[in-house]
Length: 459
Ligand code: SF4
Image 1 (tube, rainbow, N blue to C red):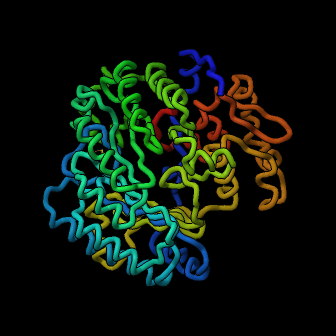
Image 2: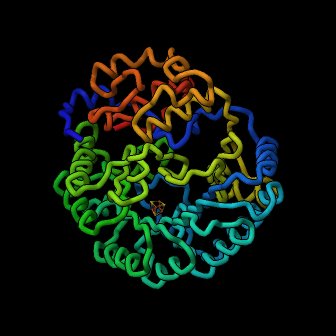
Image 3: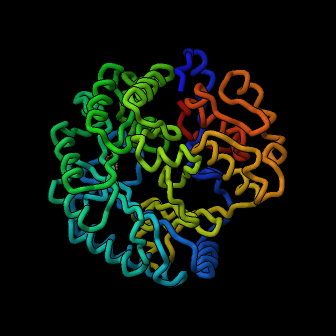
């Protein structure tokens, strides 16, 4: 990949609000009347497709203390009894879903996100694994992954997780620099992070990921270079480097963030360029918008074969046609319906206690949604839109089906973000930094004037 010149004016031009496309249509576009009845219908339909494999997302909301920059649905509690009550309700939620789809369905991906999944004690983790093990048939080669906060982890806990069947672990790092950690209210010594990373390796985890965030208050090119090099020296299998999304109108906890010391616009973009340069110099593959993987990692191999996928959990190599979500705020994808559980702890709990499936919203995908989802996710993952991608399912090539949307393409071609030929669209080396902007031309839901400013900036 060549290193394109990108000016401050150019970044300014394309730094607009836009979705990250873990799904299409994105959550703010779900405006249909969709409740428990509709979700029950989806699950009943799923029961009629017994051979379809499943992915599962479990949300563990607990954290010991809130970080200022946090954008997750989480609950601060120091009362461990709360966890037991959450797991009791989780058990009811799982029973309610398996009551409709049957037990023993094959699961090929199981991911625990948060919050802080390792806030749970070993016996609680075991309880949840047994809960899923009894309700589903977890494939022997399933990816079983979780997010871990190194600050509260121990070598013993990591060893227990590996022995319990987890095979991929993501450690939250964000930034090694102390002053940045102070600014975001998350003190985490480098020694502790390195000790837990080493414990993951000693425990034999086949996949160890590290998570970073760029654009945090106080981050400078010098300080972030130091973090990047420190991380790359560890040789993790994958690194996700997320853009800090400052959205205090959605996340009031971010109001304490000092935005005057936060890199914005071109300066923030430079932090990301530094990230890309640092990983590419050390032979990592740039995956999608913000992931980096070792050349021998499954994600790199999938990208090479143009077989990368994206779902609500991020980039994936073994996609399942359906995803069940459990726990507060979980987002699922069942028989072409998206569903989201209540994102508040009390709301989710009350719905479960009332005997309901705890969902608050959903969206039944139309045939146009499915077509656009296919195209947008292909651009986000494999950086291209072959015209032939749609022929088998829709009988026509994509350039014909998207003729209207593609009228917005010429300026992007002129600016060197994308090329168009008989094969289809291809994202250029320059376009790699603006993939979301290219995908947005196919989004039929953008531009609704009643939308609140929900999305973060694309840069
Ligand atoms: S950033 Fe992570 S650890 Fe911090 S409050 Fe949010 S979910 Fe918890």
